[in-house]
Amino acid sequence: MTDAINGYACAAPGAALAPFQFARRHPRVDDVVIEIQYCGVCHSDLHQAHNDWGNTRYPVVPGHEIIGRVINVGASVSRFRTGDIVGVGCLVDSCGDCPPCCEGEEQYCLNRPTPTYNGVDRHDGSTTYGGYSERIVVAEKFVLRIPDRLDLKAAAPLLCAGITSYSPLRHWNVGRGQRVAVVGLGGLGHMGLKFAKALGAEVTLITRSAGKEQEARRLGADDVLVSSDPAQIGPAAGRFDLILDTIPTPHDLNPYLSTLRLNGTLVLVGLIGPIAPPVHSGLLVTARRSVAGSAIGGVEQMQEMLDFCAAHDINCDVEMIRMQDINRAYERLLKSDVRYRFVIDMGSLKARVPAE
Ligand SMILES: [Zn+2]
Ligand SMILES: [Zn+2]
Image (cartoon, rainbow, N blue to C red; front, side, top):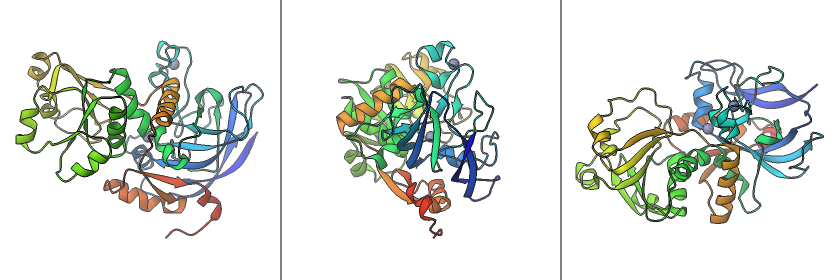
């Protein structure tokens, strides 16, 4: 049993996104049916549409920063009712049995969690389609409660960009008395600054280009270092407890590692392939430093992050677009020309206005 849904899909590598009609399942007993109001635009959407990771199942309907209103629930759903405002992030299912799943770290499911789009439903084998669409049907367990205080448009990117920067800060117990550096000032980096500051740390932005000082301070940075300037990076040796490295492309980690103090950790949140040039072992051994990685966050931690945002008045800085403008938004995203996340007003899908 299915329902016909309007959305936007990419039909082949290199193709522009275009209107696409597809089917959603009727709700199972544990499903929540959500009318999508806003959907953030993540770099992963672009990578998946372009088949940059070689695993895209076409046609692909991207979108995993989803905010919407509940319009129907299955018989066993207990946490949500019609009318509730909810969110869905990068995952819609996992095995539920493996050790990471049992520890609430569904994103590290040993049997591969089911992504919100470009995945395979664990029950009926259908392809999962994401948030560039009118509605989505998701198991209750993977649906988040959106606190009343949050601005819904600006909250959408919390569901991927937000949790990706929040989770490592919590895992490494960032708090008062600690010094945190955020590398890169994009969708993830600008959230990293806000979260690290709200958690009580002293926060520094490390950026490759000068001229971002004022903007970084507005977002919560206490200090800014320009990584290309040896006169700034040299004196920062041994300074930071944690570095949140948000750069999405291969880059030299060695200059950053030298700025970590004893037992400090550099956390990568981007999938940048092999680390090149190689990390010098001396930088690790001489101060018991670590290079680590982190992926999104579990369902429970996502809810904690959303509640934390409501309590601390944190939101993403977003630029609203219409669904019809998605291809131009992708072009700008490729040039990092966005402050700091595009969010699609999904009401535009119904308006059927032509693209500009
Ligand atoms: Zn994402
Ligand atoms: Zn699992």
